[in-house]
Amino acid sequence: MESRREQAMKNFREGYNCTQAVILAHSDLLGVDTEQALKLCQSFGGGMGRLRQVCGTVSAMFFIAGALTGSADPKDPEGKKRNYDAVQRLAAAFEARNGSIVCRELLGLDKKKSSVSEEYRTGITPEPRTEEYYKKRPCLNLIGDACDVLAEIFPDK
Image (cartoon, rainbow, N blue to C red; front, side, top):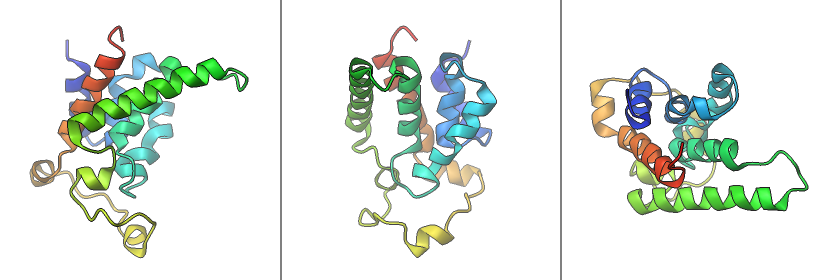
């Protein structure tokens, strides 16, 4: 049986974005229809719609943390606390491994960009997935790290 890490990396190579790749490998934990989950999380790929903000793999970890620890009750402060604690533990573990949770920093892009500039608005077309693409991007490793961090924080899942 493939590990979640291996499955997520395979999903990315099949064309799913970074967020979707991790979500799909953990879809059995979500309690929602897989197709709907993939649609709901698609916007988080590329650091939120290719804005290069929070890494899509990190967003996927948070999405999964919500499914595992979240509460739908707005008057449940303990549920919110439990979820926020999980999110912060996931972020800290991912950042300890990779130095950041921000897509553009993880990709080694200009760290000064922090707004939706003309460059971002015109640069929304994803690059074709070629072997060269996979060689120059750390995304596969980041996907694997996100799965490993999830397994550390939620060892029984």
